[in-house]
Structures are given as structure tokens and as C-alpha cells.
Amino acid sequence: MAQVEINVPEHLEMQIAQLVEQGEFLNREEAIEDLLSTGLKAYKTSGPIDEEEEPGLEDDGMMGHDDEYVF
Image (cartoon, rainbow, N blue to C red; front, side, top):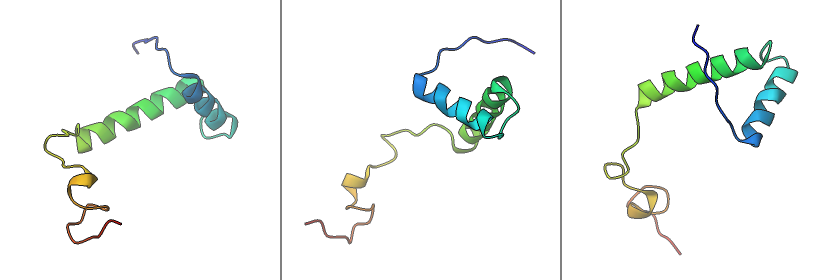
């Protein structure tokens, strides 16, 4: 297995540590591997979002529908 060194923001490190502490994962390495794998699978399924093709909510009313009123 390849080894990778990464730097993550403190808030993510704290969330990973909390998941390990709660017993969701055996250790930090398992947590990172599983979370990264899950994220890659989700990314492959949905793909990147191209903001030019996906209109923002402000273009289609408050909740993304043309028939809603905004006060």
C-alpha cells in the first residue's frame, strides 16, 4: 500500500479523532483510508459541479423554483 503524507485543518483532525474515539473506526489510519475512499466513490458518482452549467438558487427564485416569491 502506498503511503501519503497530508496536512489537514485542525477541525478535520478533531472530527477524525472523535470518530475513532466513538468506535466508528479502529484507528486514525483506518478512518482516513475509509473516509477518503468513500469521498472518492461519491465524487466519481456525482462528478465535479460546473457552476456555469448549474444555475444558482438566486437565478431561479428562493428555493430554486421560478414560482416562488421573495419579500
